[in-house]
Image (tube, rainbow, N blue to C red; front, top):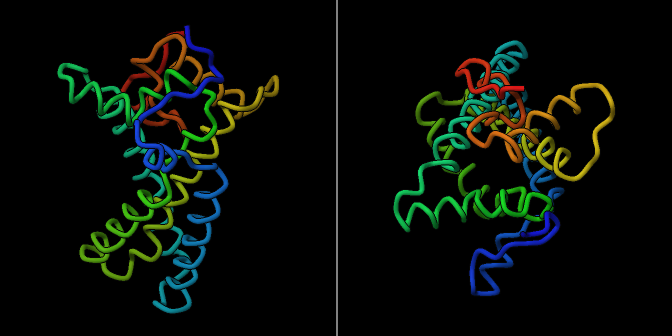
Length: 200
């Protein structure tokens, strides 16, 4: 049986394997900085009102939480019916389930997440114009909050009470008891809506 503190391997190539590892502070700093700049540009450069900026930011955060839930449920835990699917599931998420305390595999590599962020920026800019400057930070901070919560629940013992204890129990049930439930990490909102809250 694998030890929880052990580390899996995704690629045989040592360079590619190194690129799969990301210290948790890197994306938090990068996406925090990008979000701050975009929010500043939304108000100071693009002239969006404070209220509109807040509403767009919250909308982006909610959209991220839904994306997080859907990807975790339907992509990361899809049926491994073919060798390709099995490989994809292991690469995206299976290695994390086998080695849940590997601190360097709790975030996407920075180049990948930056590329996805750039694609999202231009896609949303095409659809909603300058509102993207307030909307995208909600998505990015949503991702950063997911990373923070995910890191905390996998690396720290929770206090006896409080929101962190709730997150810790919720995600622990997903890992160790009911992997077909509790797909929300940063929030149980969509588990409640789609009725995938764990049985306790």
